[in-house]
Each structure stands twice: as structure tokens, then as C-alpha cells.
Image 1 (tube, rainbow, N blue to C red):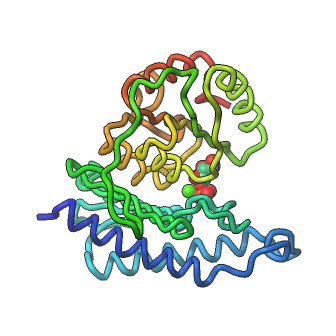
Image 2 (cartoon, rainbow, N blue to C red; image 1 turned 30 degrees about the vertical axis):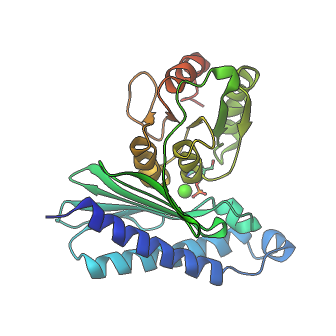
Length: 269
Ligand code: 2AM
Ligand code: CA
């Protein structure tokens, strides 16, 4: 039998190791990396691939037979019923510019149900974890605390995180949606990492998060962390979260923000 706590322990240890490697081996920052003739995104892609390789190797060593879905490696088989959903670097643009908000995100599903999630943010010294039914936690050098979302925040006082896609046409529509949101909320935060935005919802550091275009690996661990912190993560009109649209918030806030967003058609380009 596979216990969520055992999967979580492996996820945390593996994400910590990958994060350490990514910090140590990150090419020197500055204009060289950001602007050079040799494409800067190649540098990040190479690190992304190396981190995902490390993660898959470690987990496959410990648990042969599990399946994987990763941003870099795609889908690989395994008949155990456990699938690992991996984002080796979430917040790749932050990583490229040496901004601190990037993370390693590892989620585990058993028979399609999310059961464990670990998000390691090495430059902040934070590790977020959740296991199904076991709650969500933030570990720092100072200790470990249980997470709880903010509830029933009036829209006018809601601090709302969001993100934008990479394609120009999509961004134009996302700017239109933002025009409808911004006058009605306290303010917007655009951190650059979907999984860290979800951790912020879980920790009550923002009141809500919405985005179009996030993939399963961006949100697998983070959505479980929000749910275990008492929040709700879903798409529009009762649909499950998907690349179409993801909205995360505490009870009450979720419904108010949904009512504001739905008429703005945020799930289309
Ligand atoms: P990334 O850093 O791994 O690319 C930015 O708004 C957030 O959304 C980041 O977490 C980014 O992940 C993710 N993201 C944006 N556009 C994406 C896309 N087209 N596919 C996958 N993830 C995307
Ligand atoms: Ca990502």
C-alpha cells in the first residue's frame, strides 16, 4: 500500500535536492545571461532538463513502476497507479533574471487522485507541503506552521495574484480581463510562478489567484496545498481546473471573484 506521507517524504527530499543543484549550477547572472547572443532561454532549458532528469531518476530508483508527467519529459508509463507530476523550475523567467521567486514543484497522484505535493523555493528558504487529508504546511529554518487560506474577503479588499501567458494575442485578452478586475480589487500581484502563487493563497499572503494557460505540472502540487489549507481550486462554472482556466481562493472569496471574472470571458483568447 502507498501512504500519502511516504510519497510526500520522497517528494520533499527530491525537490530539495533538485533545488540545491539549480542554485549551485545556475549560470552567473546579469546581462551576459539575460541578453547574450547565445539564446538565454537555452540556458534555462538546459537547467530545466537537468533538474527533471535528476528528479525522475531519484524517484524511479526509490519507486520503480511509477508513472511521470513532466514539463520537459512528457508522459512516461508505469503500472503502479502512482503518477508524479513534475515542474523542475516553475518561474523560469525569474530563474533567468535571478529573481528569487522560482520553485521546484512535485505532485503525486494515486489512481488519478492528488495525494501529495511539495514545493521548494530555495532562494526564500521555504518548503510548502501537503498530503491528502493531512493538511498543508510551510517549513522554514524557523520551524513549521500549518497553513490556512483567508476566507470571505470582500472583493474591494482582495489582493489577487495572476499571471500571463507567453503568446502576444493571449496577453492582449488577459490585459482586457485585468482591466475589468483591477478597479474592483485591492490590488494585483504578478509574481511569475503559478505554483508560488498557489502557495501564497494557501498561506493567506494573497486572497486569490487566477490564470489562463497553466499546465498540470504548474499546479499539481500547489492545488493540493490550497485544498488542504481550506481553499477551493477550480475552473469556471463548476468545471475542474484546467489549462483553460484556474481560480484559487478561500470560501466566499472564490465565489465573489468568480462572479466578477466569468462575464469577462477569461478562459478565451
Ligand atoms: P514556467 O515558469 O514553468 O514557464 C507565469 O504566469 C506562470 O505560468 C509560470 O508558472 C509559468 O511556468 C506558467 N506558464 C505560463 N504560460 C505557460 C504555458 N504556455 N505553458 C506552461 N506554463 C505556463
Ligand atoms: Ca511551470
